[in-house]
Image (tube, rainbow, N blue to C red; front, side, top):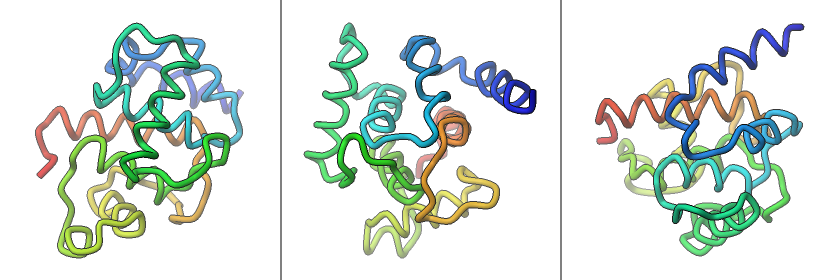
Amino acid sequence: MKIKCFVLPVLLLLPALAFAQTAAEMDNLLASGTVSAAQAARFVLGAADLLPQGLSEADAENAAYDTAFSNGWVKAAPGESITYKETAFLIMKAFNIKGGVMYSIFKNPRYAYREMVYRKLIQGRTEGAMPVTGARFLLVLDRVLRYAERGDTQ
């Protein structure tokens, strides 16, 4: 019952993602214990409009992962669980979010995570090395979309 009370508001808060991902893709993400690097790339790059339209779910996931991996935005294997710091780095690169002094100098997952915590895009009891669950991933992505919509990416 608790999970249904949590998941329903998450799904209602994501109108910006509704057109980019199908309900089946979101169900798969929520049903998974942790988010894989390929799933994260699919949702982040899709939300940032960096994927071509009209791809099937599998093709979109492969294209997104290949793009993220080739740009150095993700280092985990496609089926490997992604951590908060890797997710933060992927999001900051895909949405072109500028960071603080340390992120500007080093541009690595550690400082991307710290920057997103500072900006309250990642909230709650988290640690950079923790794997991200599907529900938490969608909450973070929702906050990022709202943040980007306001034009606060500087």
